[in-house]
Image (cartoon, rainbow, N blue to C red; front, side, top):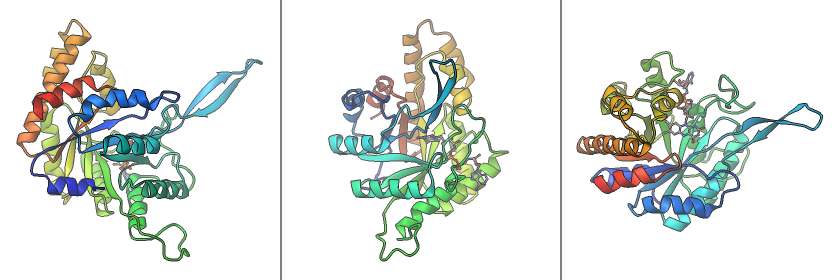
Length: 318
Ligand code: FAD
């Protein structure tokens, strides 16, 4: 199976890829297959599958007390990767997060992936649990993505956590990491964020995928800044067509990004969500075309569970 870094270096044009979510617990995999089938016709070079950490929910017990339960609403990242890979013969990239994992659990998850023939991963820190204010690492877990990258690269070099293992088999993971054209929301400033991004690359990350953005200028400036500080790996732009009015506030508040004024005005003027979808698709097509013209390595589309708009964008640009 191919590594993302090789797919990029061997390509003579901009590639197309998508990110999908595992289905909600209880949903059948066939529903997911049906949802993504229209996109698979455009032959994405790879499909990322997000990882969703545990949440706390509170259930009222018969005696009136609240019981705290830990639930994962979208489990199954690894299983979905294997199933999508087998069904569509496409590279899948599971997201691996620090949150909720000890280093030992991370090692075991990576061993599973290796056995399944999945050799690409996106290494992330993950966010705080929904009801918590800040990210808290597991005891003996990674605090930041840079040390998660190091653990994966150690395994690629045959170094597992148990140093007494005899002839441990080296893995061969290609590692992607996240980058933020509009800065990660916790970073005190862009320079410090770039410093830690560089640490992830220096520790062995092969490529960067950006947070979604709606203003290409932000991506181009980010790439320039990365190159200035010596980050030389491919930087894959992440894109999402806007699909409803609520996203004008929801996307900035969730992803800490700006909506350009022209897009804001166009969406505000829409009478129905169908109109918003059309505006979102047109905006995303324009972004995609410019990114292609300027040589972006891959256009990576965040489906967030919906394929229809991305399908229209793909039909227009591919
Ligand atoms: P890090 O690189 O660890 O950075 C986190 C913050 O800490 C930054 O502000 C950084 O500047 C700072 N920092 C980094 N290293 C250090 C250090 N050594 N010392 C001090 N400060 C440091 N989340 C999920 O839960 N599941 C997913 O599937 C998922 N997929 C994503 C895909 C993409 C493409 C992107 C862009 C994000 C995704 N996220 C996902 C969200 C991501 O987990 C959050 O944005 C998280 O808050 C940061 O993750 P990171 O890997 O960028 O963190």
